[in-house]
Image (cartoon, rainbow, N blue to C red; front, top):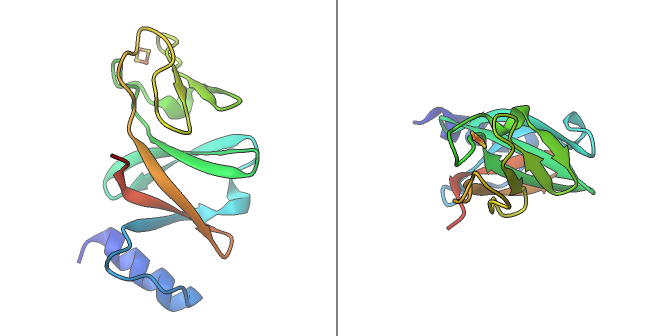
Length: 127
Ligand code: FES
């Protein structure tokens, strides 16, 4: 059993949340653990993901700039944009879309859901 699957099973048993094997989400924190606006980096199924909270909503991007891999979690958050601290590329945290050079490709975005004040991140990026 993968560590992520074990955490899902443990969480569902402790909190009584029904998660089936079709659910590919991992609990990362409580909603109150991230300020609004704010961000925090978590490991999700072997990848680092930065989770953002803006205007009460949660979003997640892979913690790697599509330009040259710098962690985006170290960047500055401006509204719904994260600025890569290395060369200044900006990304839309809602979609991962690159908004300016030098990044030309999106950074993978992940679905996030909130249940009972707990934040879950999908183990697979959006298509
Ligand atoms: S590594 Fe992010 S802009 Fe270059």
